[in-house]
Length: 163
Ligand SMILES: [Zn+2]
Image (cartoon, rainbow, N blue to C red; front, side, top):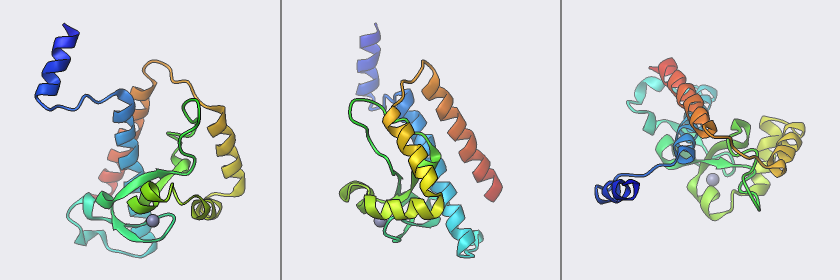
């Protein structure tokens, strides 16, 4: 029965999204909007000229290229961890708006990312994140759903703030 309904979903081309992917989608939206708004504020850019969130500008955290919300990724400083989940996968300090070139093709541009992290946070925070990263994390049942709801709420709060 379950198998049949799965086939059906696929036939209709619907995305079978896992709770982890759904949580990541909200987390990514939140991070990108957070960084777009911080960038606009820092550069004194008037938000009124933008009709859609997707068009808001932001600077890549590692190369500084200006891209839009739609064009950037939420890039991890500490990425995947060998042998299991990183403990920092959903830590918002570990994730920043990054252009697709840096995130995808330059393996996160780690050297520049370290400089960025030192400036935005501090070496102490990097050390703390590193311990959390290598410590790994085993997620409890329902935890991805909770993380997803948290970031959905955080994202919607930002949207409310600017609309
Ligand atoms: Zn970049």
